[in-house]
Amino acid sequence: GLLEGMAGVAVPICDREGRAVAALSVGTIADRLNADRMPTVVELLKREAAAIGPKINPFDATLRRPAQSLAGSPPEQRFMPGADPALLPGRPD
Image (cartoon, rainbow, N blue to C red; front, side, top):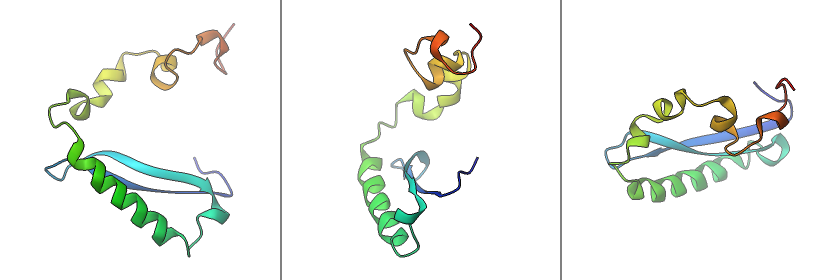
């Protein structure tokens, strides 16, 4: 969901064949990512994404099927690897 007073922007990271395989994003308070500053931040993200893309290993199976590698994992392993399930919010005692 959206949080009032927050802003964010993301750009794709593409592999050597131009397929989006990841993203680079920035999230901050809206005052810091205003209309005047947004183009500069987007350009910085695009530049970094372009530098990362060619370094991605095209044979890395996790880039092709990330959901399958996590689908059978309990939520605490998907979102907080190594977390003690008893300490996660909303978990029964």
